[in-house]
Image 1 (cartoon, rainbow, N blue to C red):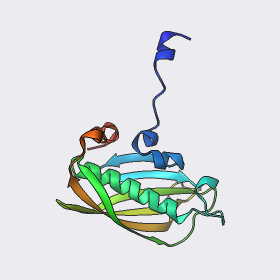
Image 2 (image 1 turned 60 degrees about the horizontal axis):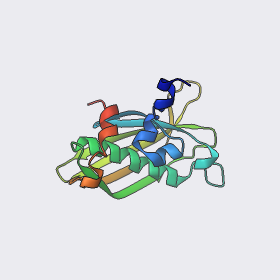
Image 3 (image 1 turned 135 degrees about the vertical axis):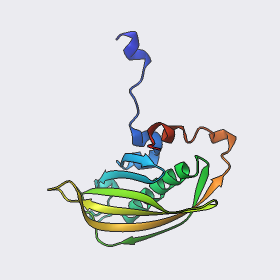
Length: 163
């Protein structure tokens, strides 16, 4: 093995760098900006309830994760904290389906932000959005001070964001 190979580790995937919990369930972050965060998830046994459909808690995890990333960027990389999450489930996504996700701000204020997060089944024939499966609303406190111990928390987002 040469020195170049042994001394450098392979780059981490974007989702792994940005959100370990989303990475653990197989979620793929595609785009990040203060105006929109997008991604997709292949529904695997890891994210299913016993009836082999997407677990509602996974939809909630995705909503909170994407809204928090977007709010963090929209607040100039200050700390944010989710204070309320509501989610409506309209239909299921089955094992093997791909789910497309888009989070976008509804309100960006000085002390709070509200984000809408929509999930759709991907139409396998067109690879586009199919039926909507859920919609969430996430309210976050924003512009909180970033503790010194995690002052670099926004660096990975800055690396991938489209400002």
